[in-house]
Image (cartoon, rainbow, N blue to C red):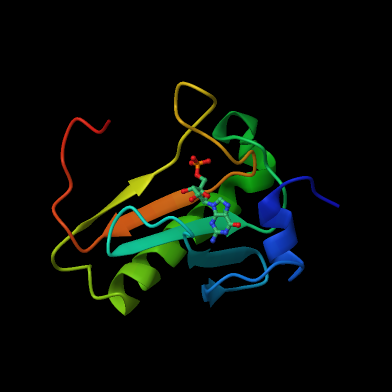
Length: 115
Ligand code: 5GP
């Protein structure tokens, strides 16, 4: 099942540097890092975009993604200095992979507004 590169990472068909995994969540370093820490947190179940979020089906999953972000921030020692969580949605949001994911970026000063 699954059509994106992230399904292949979940199924171990292509390699990724995994930092965190539970039954429902996987997190791995972004292949094109935009900051000293750049990790992608994904649900194992395929949800194309945040617009496909379903309160009945996915609420606990979203909580787990935030729990993963906190744990990764601590592991990467960016919790005290700070970090950014990003979910891109559709083309103007800059989404390239249509499997819901949250970016966690840190280890440098983030700017606002983002590009
Ligand atoms: P989006 O633009 O959809 O929010 O983010 C997709 C992210 O996935 C990009 O930051 C891109 O660098 C990352 N990415 C794309 N293909 C791969 C891959 O095969 N492995 C890893 N680790 N990251 C990938």
